[in-house]
Amino acid sequence: MDPFALARALRVEAEALAVAADLAPPDRPVPACPGMTVGDLITHVGSIHRMVTRWVTDGARPAGWTSHPDPADPVAWYRDGAAALTAVLDPARAATVTATWCPWDQTLGFWLRRMTHETAVHRVDAEAATGGASPLDEDVAADGVDEVLRLWLGTHLPPRAHTSGRPVTLRVPGRSWTVALHEGIVDYGPRGDAAAVVSGSASAVDLWLWGRAGEEHLSVEGDVTAVRALRAAVAGATG
Image 1: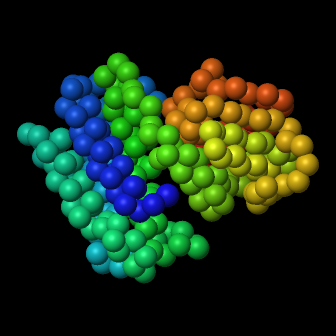
Image 2 (image 1 turned 180 degrees about the vertical axis):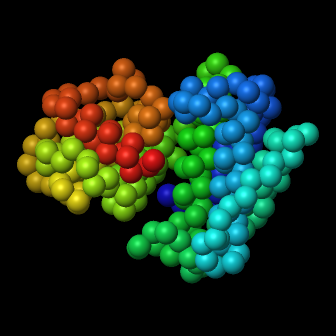
Image 3 (image 1 turned 120 degrees about the vertical axis):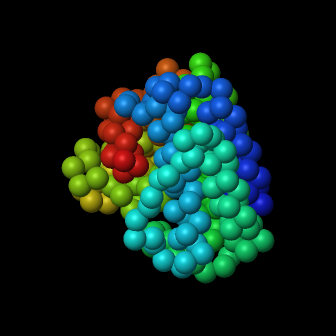
């Protein structure tokens, strides 16, 4: 996805998250995150934004992260961190080399993409706590599906993931992916017929992968067991 489009999406999603958090009491539960409140959510995302800002500016992973939201106005504290992050993640410098946790991408663009998806999914969480969430932008969501399958499964496949090796195809308008889980490895684009096909809007598929939407928002054909094994592996990979 174009870095300038990602940068615009990051700004929009970051502000939408702040607006949603402002509308809900800080002790309101976040439906998709058991045990987490809106106050916890704003602290979590604000802390991630600050940690990544330090990671980029220092050129190395911070030794730790500290969360000290302003007790009088945690949303303002969050907005300050989001502003600092977007200032550092300049899309015009997306190709700049920097430290990341991705084996194949050590550029500022990695963080621009990662923080856009991190913020967008948690924006949905914040809005869900107020009673209803808007879908993800379709272009952002399609890129998010690709990120989940390639980055998260490709680097964090759980050692005890159910690995039948049966291919599952995911389809959104204009794009598709086929993956098969094997012991310790993911097979991308295997030949032959898929055991199952999951299709829907890009937003629905991305949010399903992240555990924010159920199968009722999708079309699922074929081996449901293989589909649920993929979802379980993603849940383990994304933690």
